[in-house]
Length: 445
View 1 (cartoon, one colour):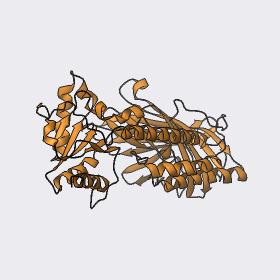
View 2 (cartoon, helix red, strand yellow):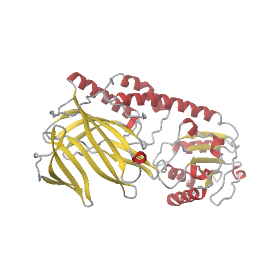
View 3 (cartoon, one colour):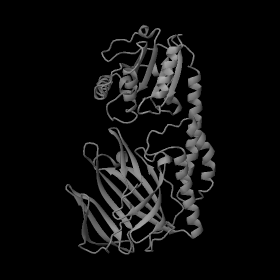
View 4 (cartoon, one colour):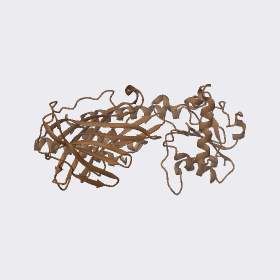
């Protein structure tokens, strides 16, 4: 993601009243900010661009791109899409990813088109789901005439919109959003520019969007997926398909997405190479035996692993924020519970910043214990207070993320080094890891 939002090649003049039609490009600017705390700390800014592919009296097909700045964000793979806007605007709308120390939240952006069976007028009211809508008056947005629509639920004002009088176009929106333990945030956006593409430009831009969506489908990535596993097959597909997709982008709303995709493809390739190099240095070599401790503070005795197949799962093991890939440890526990031999051991190794800082170690340890209890884990968890992960090869130095799975054979040598999650088989769990463990066990014969 770029450090700063770059203005797209659209008209910088104030929006003027025009009929919405295929090829209309709408650009919104907005922010998401906490009610409490310094804006410099809590604010996320974003730019939403929409291309109207088709529009009728009661619905529209739109393509979209999102650029976001601050408080984390999606990778490029989730910064574009297509949705069908109809009625009150239901559909697969764009989202923001908002990161806080307490957790990461997906913030949905309301469709900026409001279709109604009857024209709006002051006093018009209607209800959808749990929300009551009412046209409370009119307003001016630059030279445009607009209706002010208030949306309320049982708790009070949910959102306020200014909607162009002669179209379903939302000119600006303010929405109250509560996340975490009921912390209030406000979402704002307003129409910054409107441009009409000609027929040729519209067809080319739609083709560019279709190309990116097809690429995402070929990669097998579902929109909204946070933990994308860039395995060898996906990287191969990305390197093969991306150049032809990018070639048709031009200078439209997808230009920055294309740049991010190219940059990410290069970084992923370099990262995969660095991880492969790290893996190659450890496979077949004697496993290190760093200092580790159990949850009672007793030093771990590496002699207990002699002649056994040992699986080490390096991860943060903290209870809050409880985020993926925490679900993966349930399948690791399944492997442990269903092991066919007592010569197989599984250990979680907790590694996070609080554990490495003496002033926060006790809180970090409590967090590990809470997670173990919450997940009802049966395999033991060890604590890495010093440099155990570094001795095995910390993949984070390459830009990769934990978890790290290390399998040590009965001879004490590393037989498997895997960064990231595994594909999950609902019936057989972590099938790839289970196979590796079985092969390591058979190596004694």
